Length: 278
Image (tube, helix red, strand yellow):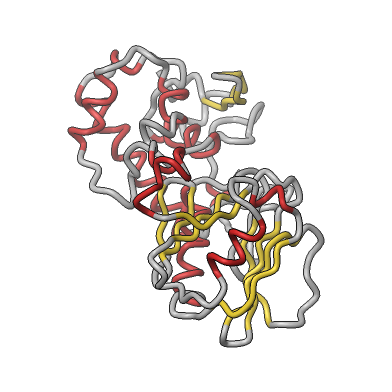
């Protein structure tokens, strides 16, 4: 579930607590989380390296190391990165443990094991982590002028919701924030992108940036399954500001007239207000 705001919140935690630390020891449990390479490759690639930065591309965490390689973590559906004192009781499904030189441990916890951890050479990213190399523009980390979005929507007749979910086009937006963005922009999720005029495109651009920025400020969204938490195990609060996501059958709090509908778009549940969004 973690999308751009949640991953950015974790990135900020890493920047504060892990950057500058040396990794003194590495443990790998379930090999599925290192399936892109191997247990040995992760241990060898991380042991005795210093984390020099904490970056994010879309939903991917990237931590350059003083060895010249980079550590990539993808949380996918249920992954968590947690920081704890050495010797603390580890949660079930703790698959990777990084011991740091300040006495702390960074844990990668993933009940569903869809997430992954890998060390790769940045000049070989297209070969070693091709999905990372193929990401589109990141609306928060990159320069994202309105003219770029205008070019994107004019180039395709795809519906807006699947377009926003396409990581090759715009990186980091998932199901939750696509619904919230389109509601804030007053646009139907099934509207063809190339039918947007300049005014609607500017609304969409402003909604993308404002919604993601507000969600980051709130520490992301933690839903009922509580699978997303930050580095210290705290949940986000942006779910309290959701206008449509997860609110099917409720009166729209924006217009006060429509009832939130739930449909399916591109195989994903989609929430919108038929009065606000046209």
